[in-house]
Image 1 (tube, helix red, strand yellow):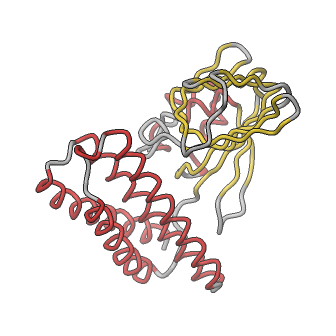
Image 2 (cartoon, one colour):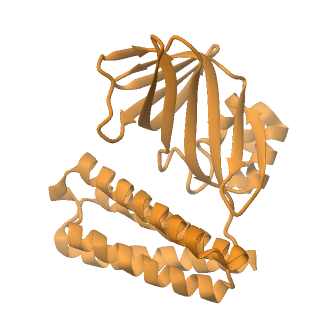
Length: 269
């Protein structure tokens, strides 16, 4: 049954993207913005399928509505980010984006019904901790980052574990829907001169330099530091969202360690 939900989910994504491509052509949408909104529609369909599958298992209408609302907010966030990044003149109109959302909802409902409500592959979320951190306009440095990165699954799954932080970076580039292809959002928290600060970031280009983990970052939303450099005076935490992948991929990478990126490509594709 799991293979059925994957098949229907893939078909749903293809249909959604074909609908967008046909409409976008008439508006002369740039290829880069089109690709970004394509990914947003794909994430939206997967999220809705997960919400319907969870409802089929637990029959909790309130949780279903909350889950669907989160899916909608994420879709809006991703499409707004694409438009802000590439420019309104290069992207789809608000009416077209709304039409994509409506069609995605309709087809997701049909796909979930046909698939029998089985849950799609788990979505993994990650937490990283460091002894301190430095945040600038373009870079986040987790100083003295922990050697292990914790992960856990989104509902309805109940799985959790840890992997080496260098293996997490290897996994960043693996799979068809990798973080390298669609950069994740993250919540960064630390203490500065006794005050807790919290910023929403988009992460790209992770790299280890000794015991420090560096990311290139883009700020999300309106909350920004008052200074160009934020020096955290205590432990810092980074919460990284939504990596759609199978647990076998991470088990493979964890087993082979430094060789995981080369040996686990087939498992993680």
